[in-house]
Image (cartoon, rainbow, N blue to C red):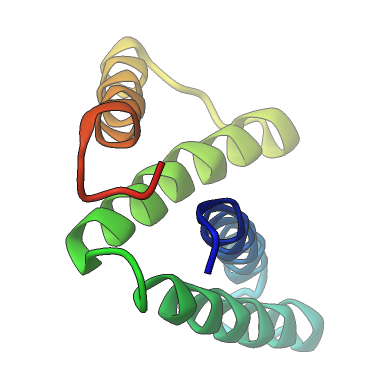
Length: 113
């Protein structure tokens, strides 16, 4: 697989996970049908796409990027769409996560460039 394809697949896995997590928060303990189905389908797609990236990238690196980007994106969705507040420690922590993902992507030899 070409590096561009791998990054596209990983990005799609992250988006699917963010959609699934957003739906999970709206499923009311998996009692609402539509958000529950979206959660199940979203996570299934996310993990399938994630498994494809693991064929060519190290597990730890893939998981760090996937989870870090997912945390930041789900936090942005919750903040922008649902008005959840972020305090200074939350913003600092998210900045550290983003910094870590950038460092891995820019400097690690374990990541295809």
